[in-house]
Length: 155
Image 1 (cartoon, rainbow, N blue to C red):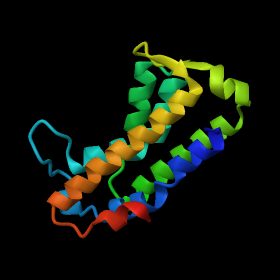
Image 2 (image 1 turned 45 degrees about the vertical axis):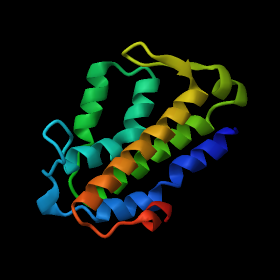
Image 3 (image 1 turned 90 degrees about the horizontal axis):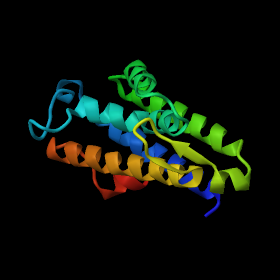
Image 4 (image 1 turned 90 degrees about the vertical axis):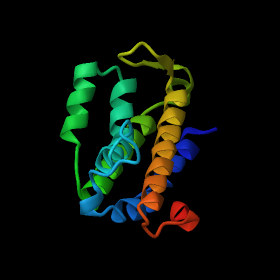
């Protein structure tokens, strides 16, 4: 698959994420479905940060740099969360647009924890990571009685 097609898969999340983030109520930010799971706020931040943080990881950022980036991107409001998401998507698109087809297919990115794979596979990782946490947030919101349904996912 061409890198532009994969980048489109990342940006296709924008509409549904805006709707999901808008459904987060301030009094529910600290809610968690189980004691060993993230709160709504933690999960929303994890999701919003996926593009920025995953890009930093694949570009060889140290664990300390990644943790500092995560801390700097923590937000609470829906507008701020979508801004973090969109800024990260923009950075990912800029990075991948700067690659040749050969670099996209063969250049390897290595994470601070030792995982290495071609940049094409890292882009797939960003996509699946975003969709994974989107599904989690959707489930949290359903459990909280928020008006989300399958159509929310396909905006």
